[in-house]
Length: 136
Image 1 (cartoon, rainbow, N blue to C red):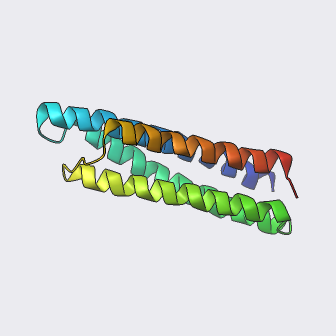
Image 2: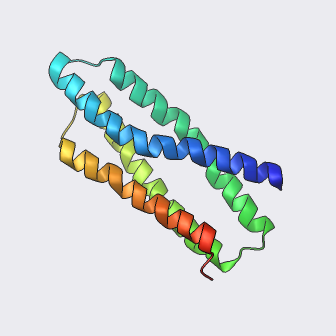
């Protein structure tokens, strides 16, 4: 079980890095697009980061469910799963923004993307609180 925890934590760390970084990278990609009028290196980097971390997110969710199963599905894991699904939905929306940006469509403002980026921080804090406190 310790190896499952290690893999879970490692993949969560990688996925969270991308959850925080990709919306910020979209801001800079948008600025690059406005300046160059074409697809530049920031776009390529953002797409690669999103794709790579998508795999990490899948592994993190699978190993998390595996751990919950091994622990007998304690009540707090249900709340954690719900919060992780909300964060995964946020990440899915980020993917939608990346796909649109790949086509040169940047309709969201820098301010929107910064706020969108910060929403994931609150999700991460909520998940950490549930895992550490185990409220029920």
